[in-house]
Amino acid sequence: MKDLAVALTQRRAQHLYRTRTTVDAVEGVYAIVNGARLLNFCSNDYLGLARHPEVINALQQGAARYGVGGTAAHLVCGHHAPHHALEEELAAFAGYPRALLFSTGYMANLGIASALLGRHAAVFEDRLNHASLLDAGLSSDARFKRYAHNDIAQLQGLLNESSAAHKLIMCDGVFSMDGDIAPLPALADCARDHNAGLMIDDAHGFGVLGAQGRGVLEHFQIPTASVPIYMATLGKALGCFGAFVAGDEDVIETLIQESRPYIYTTATPPALAEATRASLRLVQTEAWRREHLRDLISTFRHGARQLGLRLLDSATPIQPIIIGAAADAVAASEKLRAQGVWISAIRPPTVPTGSARLRVTLSAAHTAHHVERLLSALEGVA
Image (cartoon, rainbow, N blue to C red; front, side, top):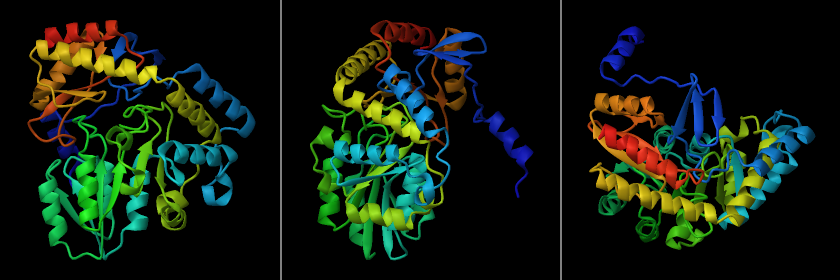
């Protein structure tokens, strides 16, 4: 076992030490931290639904009827009527025959890999995939291959070289640290041409992308048949908690029978499923949230370019500002907080060395005035 104290000291010296910030209260898009009221640009509450009155009321009514805890795993006595209804509604919205709830996106990805990949399989992943996807591939019995970010030619080469009986491409729909959208049409063609499966983690696209918020598949008008395994989370655009996997009957039944993270985990609270059902209805009926969010993204990018900030090519609510050195990113974040604006500094190993950044996330709960205040604060830092 390594010397923990020495390792922690090294982290501090390299400006890579992680600390938690305790939020005392939330007031809309403001977080109260140690008495300070901070305009929050860290949250993944992309549609501003986490504090919606209908969602809160559904949670309260669900708790009054079903209690607080799920009380058991789904396969014991933890699968309640709200869970089942939510699965059916998510499947219909995503356009798949069935859906299966998981406690987190991390567990869903681990569950997919553990149940669907064996030692005769190979899994292929983008180098900038989320840690949960990478860990899922690495922890499976399959041969694990990574290709350069969005490099379809390299992926094709790896697929050509593979002699595995079964091949699966696992990829983010929207990359969480860069905010760019995966080239899904090219991935789907690649999977088809090489007789490989395709799994998309749409954690940051579900609810946001597409005219109706159905995610990256709707964004590109890709049929669900081209993406046999689809995963999305419920704690971002939907403002709740959990995740789901969508697929055909065989995929979902295999997960129920063989996915250890699903089988051996207590079900999420049924009241939470009721809240998520309310949130899903709002995603479908309040399209103005996505339209407003797109306007905010455009306003921010225009203003940031005028300030000379180094942005990445992102049309999503994730708008990274590349700083470079970890120490500089931390310093910039602290300067912004002193002005009442909260943006986290993202550092290695979450992002590559030399690309530490401020990860701005926009929400439909923000106003144009909030974005103007953000840009004003960034001007001082820049």
